[in-house]
Structure formats: C-alpha cells, structure tokens
Amino acid sequence: MTRLINNEDGSDLMVSDAAGQIALPAPTLAPVAVPEVGTGKPARHGKSRWPARLDLLQSATGLFLALFLMAHMFFVSSILISHDAFYYVARFFEGEFFLGKPYPILVSGVVALILTIFVAHAWLAMRKFPAGYRQYRAFVAHKNNLRHGDTSLWWLQIWTGFALFFMATIHLYDMLTQPALIGPYESADRVWTGNMWPLYLMLLLAAELHASIGLYRLAIKWGWFDSAKPNLSRRRLRWAKHGISAFYITLGLVTLAAYVDLGRAHVDKAGERYVPTHLSAPAATGKH
Ligand code: HEM
Figure 1 (spheres, rainbow, N blue to C red):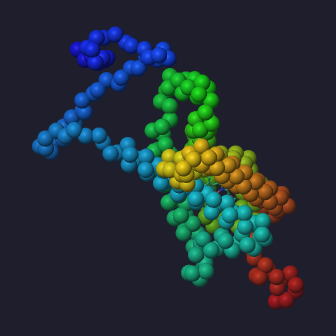
Figure 2: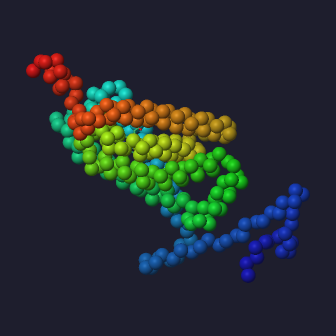
Figure 3: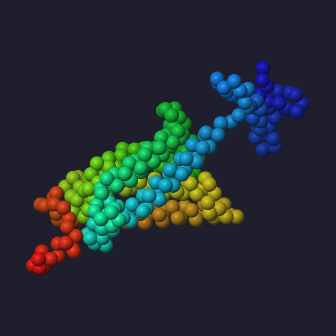
C-alpha cells in the first residue's frame, strides 16, 4: 500500500507546527508511462505538451479578437464624423479603391475568417468552463469565500463569453450574408427598422467587458508590463482595464445612438441605399 505520509522517523502520525498547521506533504507519484500505441516505439514517460499549446492558442486567438474589436469600433464609429466617412470606410473594405468597383464578397471573406477564429476561441475556452452543477457550486463557493477581484473578473468573463456565443454569432451571420448592405442608411435601417439595436446594446456590453478583462488577464498571465513591484503593476493594469472598458463602451453607446437617430429619421424610406455627397450633390444643386 502507498504511504500517504512519509515522516522522517517512519511513523504515520501527523505532526502540527507551532501555529497548529498540519503540513501534508504531497504524495510522490511516479510519472505515468504513456505507451506509443501501434508505433512499436517503447513506452515514454511524458507530460503532454498539448495543454500548454492549447493555452497559447487560446491566448493568441483572444488577443487577435480583442484587437480586431477595437479596430472594428473605430471603423463603425466613423458614422460620427459624417455619413460619407462611414460610406467610404465600407467601400474601402469592399476593395473599391484598389479594384475599381466594390466586391462585397471580400467582406464576407473577412467575416468568415473572424467567425472561424471566434469559434476556435470559444471551443478552446470551453475547456475552462465548470463541467456540471457540482463544479459550478464548488467554484461559486470558492469565489465567495476568496473575494478576490481577479477571481470575480474570471467569473464575469465566463458569463460574458457564454452570452457572446449567441449574440456575436447572430451579428456575424448578418454580416456574412448581407455584406453589400453596409452603409449609413443600410446600417441605420438594420439597427432601427430591423430591430437590431437591443441585440447590439447587449452585444456591446458583453463584448467590451469580455475583451478588456481578457486583455487584463493576458497581461497578468504572460507577465506583460511586469515591474519590480507586482502589486503596483497589477493595480496599474486594473486601471488600464477599467479605462479601456469605459472608453469603448462610451464610444459604442454614442455610435449606437447615432445609428438609432439616423434609422428613426429614415424610417419612411427604409431600404433606400445611401448615395455619397459627391454623387448626389449635382442633383441637389440642380446641376446635371
Ligand atoms: C468581420 C466581422 C464584422 C463586421 C464586418 C462587422 C460590421 C459591423 C457593422 C457594419 C456594424 C454597424 C451596424 C450594422 O451595420 O449592422 C457593426 C456594429 C456592431 N458590431 Fe460588428 N462586425 C463584425 C464583427 C463583430 C464582432 C466579432 C463583434 C463582437 C463580438 C461585433 C460587435 C458589434 C457591436 C457591439 C456593434 C454595435 C455598434 C455600436 O454599438 O457602436 N462586431 N458591426
């Protein structure tokens, strides 16, 4: 039988220290021999590198998606500059300025790539979800006992990630199948007349919280911006995280309000395509 307690004097008694703590040494387990099935090679003692690889992949896909989301928010918020600004951003991604005319299929291609990375990231993240009700209860009890900010953040990330499964997929499917319908009127009509604004509102909150917590946790995990004073650098990272959340949520809300405003104003002509000023101006001024 394996002895769980190996005291130096050979006794099985547990001994407490001056503070009354009982030290329980971890049992020494022999490394597990993994036979190489069907290769004829001898069994090897090994720890699989796959958990580490999957972890790295999860970090890399998360970082990519968070950076994409930040850039995406700037492109979408170009509506705040002018209708034309957003119109040209949309045509740019359709390749009009390099290829001579717009190819909406290019947008679908980018969406397909983002969707693939999104699904891969969600699949990798699922490994960390509590499996079953028992694990869930155990984690909640642990979190409430511990009352540590980072553990609560992780919990929030699990829930926002779960919500993103559904909400981001709806939006991405829309963009994948209607790439040509991106423009000031087209987007505003989708937001207001197409009733997408409640989804966008929830998606905005979930995505921005999830991404900023994700970036914070990445920085802690991989030791980015580490300094000689770990507590100080953690506090700084926390402030950066709050700042990023606040900035992108505010920008997203103001942008969403602009689409809602335009959609409401355009409700009677919903479905009409936007024509940029340089093409519509001659008609408006009477010049032909
Ligand atoms: C290549 C992929 C994507 C494209 C082409 C795209 C495009 C757009 C466009 C054109 C809008 C303006 C509204 C509309 O036209 O319906 C929009 C809004 C929005 N998108 Fe995306 N999107 C993409 C991916 C994502 C992802 C992955 C997320 C989050 C996980 C996201 C979150 C949002 C949110 C929250 C809004 C509302 C805007 C706001 O509140 O300011 N998008 N997107």
